Amino acid sequence: MSGAEHDFGAFVAARATSLLRVAYLACGDETEAEDLLQTALERTYRKWDRIRHDSPEPYVRRVIVNAAISRARRRAILKIIPMHSPPDTPARTDDPDLQHVLREALRALPPRQRAVVVLRYWEDLSETQTAEVLGCSVGTVKSQASKAMAKLRSALGQDTVKGVIRNAHA
Amino acid sequence: MPTLEDELRRLMADDTARLHAAPDLLERVVRSHRARRSRVKAVAVAASVAAALVVVGGPAVYLSAGPAPTAGGPGTTSAVPEPPAIDDTPPAPTEPANLGDLGDGKEFGHVKVGYLPERLVWGNWSIDHGDSYSTSYNYKGDDEGSYRVQIFVYENGAVQELEDRLQTYRDEEEGQEVTVGGRSGYQVVTNVGEDGMAGTPTLFLKLGDRQWAEITFSPVYAKEFRDAEAVTAELNRIGEGLTSTL
Image (tube, rainbow over all chains, first blue to last red; front, side, top):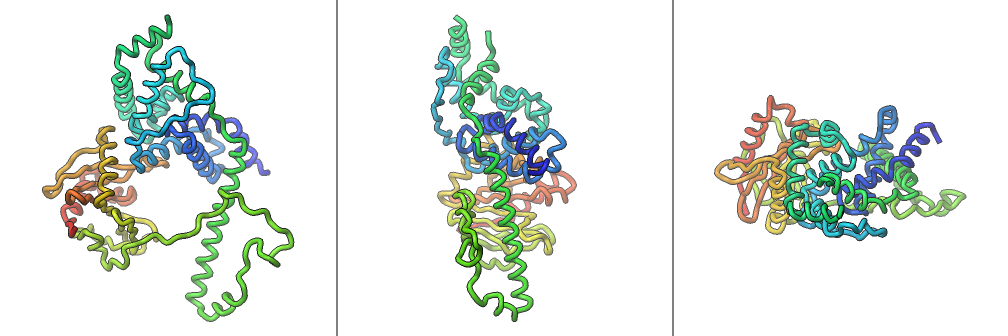
């Protein structure tokens, strides 16, 4: 195995699970997430000699997120929200209502807004970094994040949010 | 009190905690990469052989004489190779349906193209899915498979699919409603672009209740114009010239 292959193997071993989770959050389907990740890694492997010296993770993340958006748009799946497979391990149960409503609201977001939410609040990327991933302006990230959060709040209903959060801490 | 952002983080953490990359992911990536490289080589070899056949003619007799070697076939190798994994098997090549010889490309399916920008010629390519079909235009000498302008047409059942896509743009407040030549439409720069491409300027135009057209400029072609306004003007000219024969 060459040094480059070894490096790539080490990168996959270290980061694949984290990237799979980003893919899942971006597309909402486990099988599709695995496919997105494999496709992104194949592209990365082809360009590894060029990418390996920088940080490859942002590149893979960018491919995953944008491919997820492109696929969602192409398939017009917004109206056909993927069926949710219940997790093997139960989610935290202190606020199941909120989790359910929030999950469905998150899934119902348009793909780009969902991507912004995932990148900002899951990956903890700054607005500038998020803009770089999505290939758009910081202003667009701000407006998309603002719209997404407004939709989530609206879907939940402000009372629900306050109530459930209060219950969770009661 | 946790904020909505905190709740989102917790939800996402809970929803993804069970997910772990497959242990054979690296192997699949490398294997797929090699299979792809082999396919590319095979296509290149096939293309060069085909070219040799066309140019030389005579040696075709020799090239086609005798049984073609098959991978793993008797006598080709002393060791029997393992059968390829299912996901290594390239899909059987199938020729997609097309619209046939379109001549200058100014009439295809149920539409007529009244205006094309200067120097653009039919790309000698089309695809026909029945309710939707498409063809493209480029410059003489452009690489095969590239395009400068592509027109998609959606009819009957495919119109609903297109309207769903348009609704997506509206939901995300991307693009804008337009009227071109007295017909309603939607203008947007599509595709975020996996490689950070600037995007594809696109005009969706309603040709009738059961027919829509999507006119797109490739990002490369769009760069030839001085600015976005010039791109839009040219897209509109093509749209205005498009007529339905449905």
